[in-house]
Amino acid sequence: MRTTLIAGNWKMNKSVSETVLLISELAPLVRDDIARGVEVAVCPPFIALATARDVLSNSGLKLGAQNVNPEAKGAFTGEIAPGMLSGLTEYVIVGHSERRQIFGESDAFVNKKALAVLAAGMAPILCVGETLAENEAGQTEAVLTRQVAAGLSGIAPNDLSRVVIAYEPIWAIGTGRAATAADAQNRCAFIRAEIRKLAGAAADTMRIQYGGSVTPANAREILSKPDIDGALVGGASLKAADFAAIVAAA
Ligand code: PEP
Image (tube, rainbow, N blue to C red):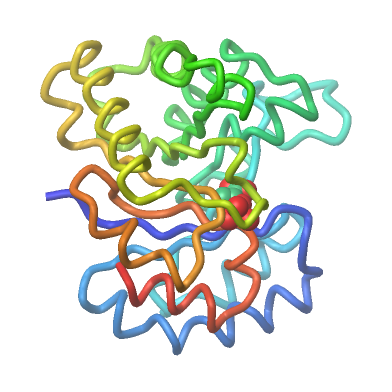
């Protein structure tokens, strides 16, 4: 039985005071859903994580970071190490398409991050997904095969159940054009089959989220699919009522 995880990726939005406000609004709205077993996480900017940790205490909400540097410490100006996050966040998003595309992060670097997050006692949310051009060229499965294999490389079998995969077709992110629920299900089932080839039965314990323009209007259908174990939500996670409506649909 896989617990549904709805995670909000706030990206470069919300100051510290706005973080306090949003979590304070959100917590009462999702209390009953957390009580019935839905896992709900928010991923504010680094600067707000410590405050967020205090504000969400006793709410049942989980906390995630949006990125990490895999090195333990050193001369990496502006970066944040896994050990700085452990004890603060439960989750760390790695390999988001914005990091891959804007900041040039490779499959190998994303894998190093996933390994470092696990070693520091947190769970990576490993994002994979194809571009529009790759989709239109019929390369989606090849891209997913490569990103999943590279992303999970070297992860100990015992650790795999802690890894969350987020299938995020890049053409659906922030565009208002979500994948259809049927397509999202097919891709997530494909990813699970790839994991099964790599790691056998661990595939059944790993959670696979869908992300890309999830809204209160489309969440219920997407989240009803058997291989979709939650959602990674960008824009709609910035409004408490919208995010809570997505959680309620889970
Ligand atoms: C994301 O950035 O992970 C995302 C899914 O964004 P949005 O929901 O805005 O498409």
